[in-house]
Image (cartoon, one colour):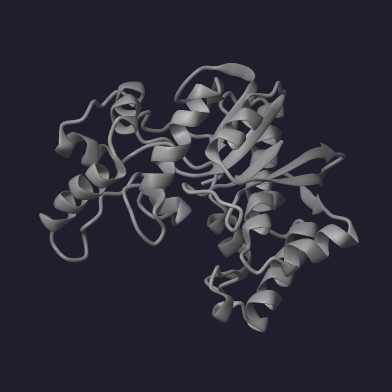
Amino acid sequence: MLGCDFTSAPSRRKPITLASGRVDRGRVVLQGIEHFDSLDSWTDRLRAPGPWVGGFDLPFGLPRELVHSLGWPEDWSACMDHYANQTREAIRDRFAGFCDARPAGGKFAHRVTDGPAGSSPSMKWVNPPVAFMLHAGVPRLRAAGVTLAGLQAGDPQRVALEAYPGMLARSVIGSTSYKSDDKAKQTPDRLIARKTLINALENGQAPLLQTSGLRLRLSHAQRDDLADDASGDRLDAVLCLLQAAWALHQHESGHPLWGLPAFDPLEGWIVGA
């Protein structure tokens, strides 16, 4: 299994973080964490032979309402081809124009999955820039030839699912903040929140884990490493790994689509939502 904390502009300071693990008698064993400071090196890693199922923290689709309003293709593959050919400046301008024409309090269009997941709309271009994460990540997942569950068939030994670490974290610690890239905001309270979250994951106390009987298994060094990473990138990758583990459990229990419900094939769905 893989869990990926993604950034659309990776660098040495802020790389893409990838956690890998396996399930052993109901324990999700963290095997390692890798870092990629370029999109090309991350894509090369995804091309390596499986088998794996991975949770990736980036949106896999746009809101149908937005796509329809812009007159873009409403078939997912065609829409993603069209989107990949846009510049980030063009995306920002088109999405800003869409928002400007809408009333306060309803500027953004949402996917159906945003409701149960509590996720940001995939058309947001700032705070967080998930629209650019989609623009950077989905074309490379497709180029790597992986299967995007329910969206695009590819290598059945490499299966990518849209994950969202915030959903799993909030189910344990509510709205308490546990991370920040701003050093001034990397406070003792956030450290306590990370330790609380990690402890709950190890004890299988998150609702998503309780439905599958899974719990995280860490070494002492791994536990300290996750807690000490004030950016939360490593912990977010592990949260995505756990969502992939839940999906694998659903698959092995006979669910035909990795635990995903019936969903709009243009928008996509966040695993576990």
